[in-house]
Image 1 (cartoon, helix red, strand yellow):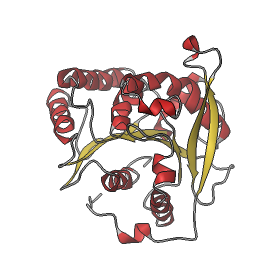
Image 2 (image 1 turned 90 degrees about the vertical axis):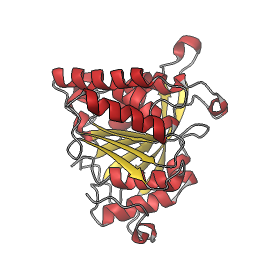
Image 3 (image 1 turned 180 degrees about the vertical axis):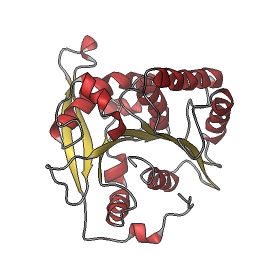
Image 4 (image 1 turned 45 degrees about the vertical axis):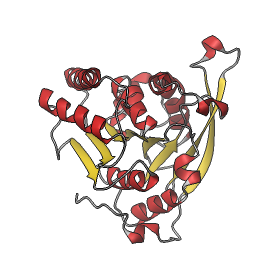
Length: 283
């Protein structure tokens, strides 16, 4: 695939083959230890044009960044939906279901500075969100959401996120749920400005090695960052060190680090990241 650094204009044109964005509600029992009732959660779900419940669809779980919630990708930036519609219509990517959840517990919770949300989301993701989504929509699980079947269908599941959602991509999905996903898109950063680079390198390498040992291959890790982004240097440093320490990541085969010249920490860059990721995953 040839990388571009400006969104092609035709991706932003209106089309009559529009997908549908639905509100999806589910309960999470993950946090019941400090709650008397399950936590009621909400996500948005993009269904491609012509969604047909008799067909099976791959699923991309796509996260926002710090201080925002599930509305970021598809509601606050509705041109994301236009890009998705055009990509599918022009057969640049497979028709897939895209789920935009939130790692925050409530609208008020989004003001927290607690980065533990990134890693703790691993429980809700595995036990609540994926089973709820993939028993409701037509996916490769066929509605059978046992842990064994979720592992068996991991090639039909991807996870990506921007900024704090990029950290969550590593921490909740990659390190802790590698058996449920084989495609990843961390957009802008790995551990933040105060993170431990060596620890992240160790965790990435161990995840890859343990996955291979257990017969869980990585299909693709597509890292993205603008070179003027505040998260660029730490992300670049970590992934360069990972490449030195493991031969499991092979650039152009199951790994890329897409760099946008002049790209900063903004939606223009993240939509470009998504545009490229969708041309790689589920192939």
